[in-house]
Length: 229
Image (tube, rainbow, N blue to C red; front, side, top):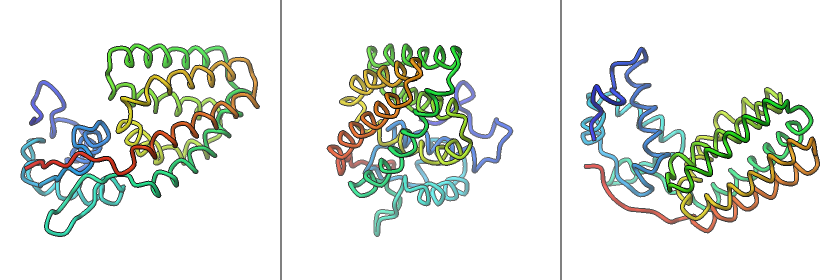
């Protein structure tokens, strides 16, 4: 669907056109609008976004570097399918990062910080109940990034900015199976942070990332082959 003045119009924002196309393309891949295995042609993407092919071509180069798209001989650009090796590497980093962040958050969280986390939990529960999986994936990312912010460690925040694009993408692929379990695990994490239980928060974070990794690996290699003509 092409972007119109009523929604996310490309070209109307005070941002370079390529960057607007890039942001939109990333979002559609992460949200599953363009699922793993789907071919992405410049002509169709240009029509979808209401732009010329040049910014689309530039954006495709960047999402290829991101690992969201691969170039396949005789097919061109195809949305990548996360494989077991990539998922294992992603979750190895995520487990270490989130465990440290959870421990620090339990030591540093204010009542307002906890209230913010509870608000995200409530929103995630409501999104899960109405089966809004894209919103669930967004809220999953928001909650983990908020824990990292609460940790007060700027190095963790810097690392997370690149990591969570892929975390959200992988989560969205298996969200239909994962969302209810993830929400319950998040409750245990936030409970430990609110209690100031650093060891408990670290353990809850590690158990959560282990469960998420196991679920993601179960879906590794699943794809939906299609084409954006």
